Image 1: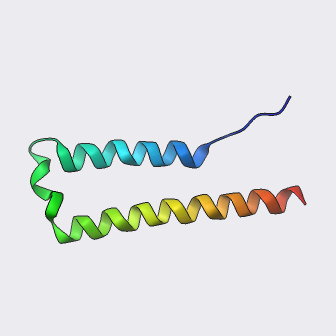
Image 2: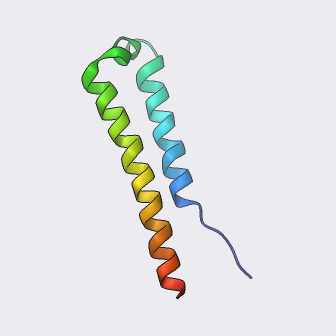
Image 3: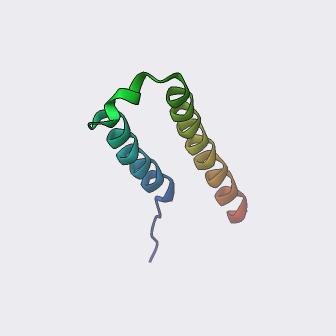
Length: 64
């Protein structure tokens, strides 16, 4: 029996939960336009994307 683990999707979903709470729920909504938070948010999303790509690459290598 084969299965699939979507670890990266779970990480991304959890990040989005935190991001939504941080940016859109009072009193945190005031930080939405803070330049440092915008950069940190963009960096976190980019890191999750890079992690997912690295994980996929490592997985493919392990199968060969």
